[in-house]
Amino acid sequence: MRHFYSEIPGWFTFSRFYREVVASAPEPARFVEIGVWKGRSTAFLGVEIINSAKRIRLDVVDTFQGSDELVHQQDADLGRLEQEFRRNIEPVAAVIGTIRPEPSTDAASHYSDRSLDFVFIDAAHDYESVKKDIQAWKPKIKRDGIFAGHDYHPEWPGVVQAVDELCPNRTVLRMQECWVVR
Image (tube, rainbow, N blue to C red; front, side, top):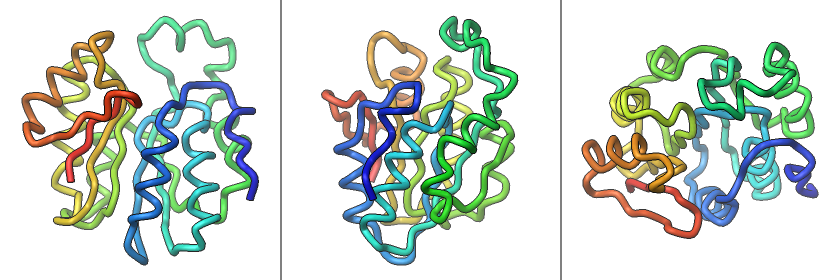
C-alpha cells in the first residue's frame, strides 16, 4: 500500500523508528499509539503494518479534544477531531483495533500488565501529564516490548524531566526526538 500520511495535517518525524518497530515486531503483536491528533502518524504506522503482512493490532488513544498548546486551540475543527481522525485513517482501518476516545491514564486500565509489544506516547507535553502517562503505561509493556515516546527535546522540558526521572535506562534518538525503553 502506498503511504498517504503526508496528506494528513499534523506532525510526524519518526518514520524510520516506526519502520524498525514494525520490522522487529513479533507475531502476533499488540501496539498502542497514544496521542494521535488527526491521524498522520497512525496512517504511516498502519501502512507499515499492512505492508509487512504481520498480524499486528494497533489500538489508538486520544481525548480528541486537543490540548492547551496554542496550535491546538487555533484549530477551527477541534470539535470534529475524532470524525476527522476516523476519516483520515480509513484506508488502514483493517489493522486498527480499538479507538479509545478517553484520557490516556483511563485507557491504560483496559490492558493487562505485560500485554503490549509496543506503546508510543505523544500526548500532552507537560511534566505531570507525561509522568502519569509513563506510570500508567510502563507496566503494560511485555518484558521484550518497546516503550517509547516523542518530543524528547529542550522545547518540551516536561517531557524530558518525566522521562529522565521514570525511564533512566532510555535511549534517545536525537534526529527523531524520540525516547525509547527496550
